[in-house]
Amino acid sequence: MERFNGYLKQIVARYIQGHRKDWDHYIAPALLATRTRVHSVHGYSPFFLLYGLPPRLPGDEVQPIALPLDTPHDDDSPRLAQRFQSLLGVRRTSRQQIRRHQHLANQRYQRTHRKPHKYYKDDPVLVKNGLRYAFTP
Image (tube, rainbow, N blue to C red):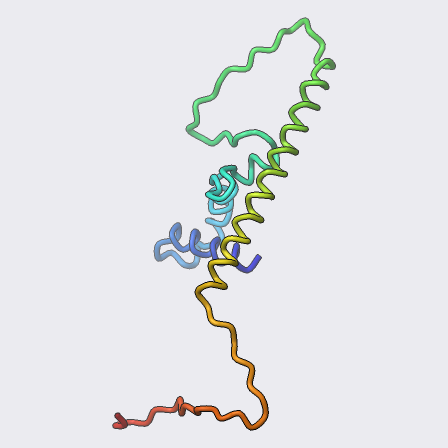
């Protein structure tokens, strides 16, 4: 959550451009941007993973919906059930891809960062004086 808050703060900072008092007016557009952005790890937006549909944004081309007027809409349940099962599969796949990405990121981190050394009593250690005084080399 802290990481997301930092990301949201960056987006709001880009929106306000010096108008710091109006930052709260830009939260909703920033949230819309983060919820409709396609994630690089699994290729889906959070909006799609929640609702199973791509988001329709202002300016998007809208396709007309043609529904037969004489057909009852009760027979949509098999189609909706299949769509729900498909969405569950997409969510499962995206979770697996996120876990795989986290595992790879962890492996990369482990390769590039040293493990902390364990010190025992009476081990010789070097002490660095972190204080710097004026005119010291």
